[in-house]
Image (tube, rainbow, N blue to C red; front, side, top):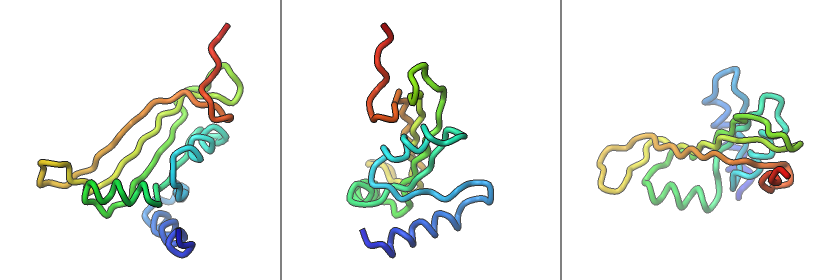
Length: 124
């Protein structure tokens, strides 16, 4: 990805944020945000999806709006470095097949995730 495009996207996202919200990181997948949320004192991370996957999704749903990702820690798990995370992907101006109206579409996922990239070990 072009560095200027990446920086431009980051600046664009930062300009659209409220004063209390930190800028969104440009990511090509959600994993870096999962790790960031696990490390964050407030248990949160925010990003904007970029790259081929973002382009394919945007083309499929006829939207030029950025694909945003929000990760929130729902609860810390007993195993160190692990938590239950809520991961939300969302995009405005999405046109679903068979619909003429564009709207915001959101996909929410829950995942138990650890800093090593694995799910928590089962309790013995």
